Length: 115
Length: 116
Image (cartoon, rainbow over all chains, first blue to last red; front, side, top):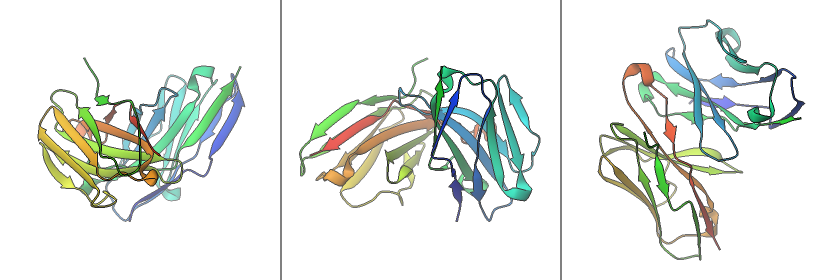
């Protein structure tokens, strides 16, 4: 069975601090996809990134970066120089190749960035 | 382009009443998902459709819940009769299936349901 764990329920930082959101996953499949979604106060979830299990290269997009380590079954998300607009709930998710776009979400991490 | 459109945004009803939530997916998308979000259980997949056909409804909690997708541009999630434990935010999401877009779901703003 697949499972995603986000142990950090809430994180509070001051603007311009760097912050890392942790994600640990479980799956028996060798082919799978990992995702991060953002849920701002307006409510709708917004797709941020997808990685497949064969691509462990870290990725950077502006102030966002993702660290995928199969050895520890982790897919962590770092926001550099956080801003108030980054305040949101962030979800990590997993999809096994056999289940296509069927995502299993973690519990979410509420990030609050204070001015 | 319009995103996923859900209605109503908010619904307050009394226990035992029928509730119908509606969703219009993004044009051209071939997958449609219904998720439920609660504090206790997080985001749960209830059911999803591919080309209007239900593929997996194993997440539908009880027979009180039913979902339909009569055409590519409309889906409903119905709860009859509703109970207080059904109170949640219900999200509809759609996606386009090419392998390069797997898991890239587009979510609506959700329908917040309160059952008194």
